[in-house]
Image (cartoon, rainbow, N blue to C red):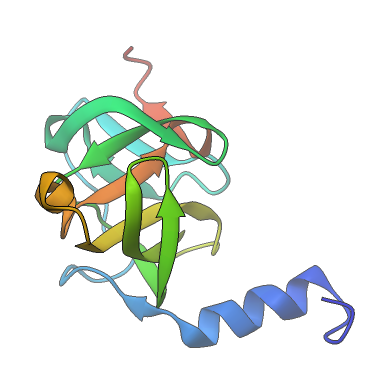
Length: 134
């Protein structure tokens, strides 16, 4: 970070390394009453109905496993040792403001963890409930 001088510079470097995660165009507004949005810019990120599990742990506490997300970009692939073993993951960023929302599981090395492949972890602390539902 000291090499690049500022947090804004680091963000722009990360943004250059990202690719769009899903086929939907950036800043797509999701429709419906149970939507999660980025806690920084309120860009819609996921449907509640796409949650596979709420029993996950992220870097900042509780996290949700989703089948699908929207309006996000992905960082580069990296192997990461998580609570459940070694996985190849990509960090998940808001496409609008580049806030870190979670990660995508690309590959699980343990047979019992293969169900996570292609799914997304979104940290509860990084999203809001749009529309006031709980």
